[in-house]
Length: 248
Image 1: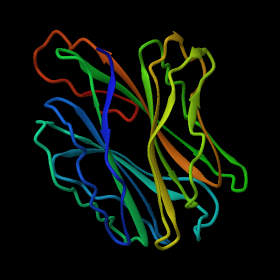
Image 2: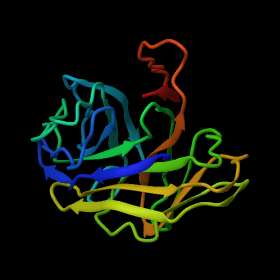
Image 3: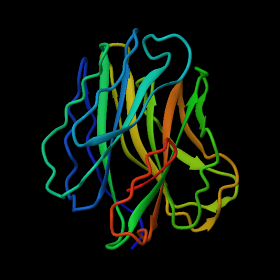
């Protein structure tokens, strides 16, 4: 067994808060991430959530905030401990106000006795009016048996069609999958998607990964490279909470 997708929840939307539901089919030690996106004309930040580590809380995209234009706030949380009995919803209320906020969970699994090694990066497309293309901020280095996962938040509420990842050096990716892609016309619009591409079977990335979509507009992406590895020699759980890498 290698990295596998368990489930991704529906996107929950609201004006001042959202409350996405945990996905079904969870097991103990699965990896669960919560992605959120928001828009407001003042400074918006995402709150601390009990039981989660907030990994990112950044403005991505460019231009002037407006209906379907400008940057959006993108947040990513990781569930600290997963028992497999998670149910119900988790409410996210941005501080500083919002006119639209969206959120959705995604869950992934590795084989028993293995752990996740995760590398994170961000990128943005600041040019409206052309097909979305987002280059990661550094070389992620995905290779054979890795999965690439993307949390994408776009300014315009239009279907993020033909989503995919590419990287110089990787010659054979698996199929690009859109796990969820849902927009909201509340406030100034917002669209949130979880997508992935893997497993990689041939090659190693030698340049920064590129996310692309046939949709147009400004957007941001948080890239996650998921890899199944053996746990460290110590039996104690290990977490490396730098911006770019971590074990789960």
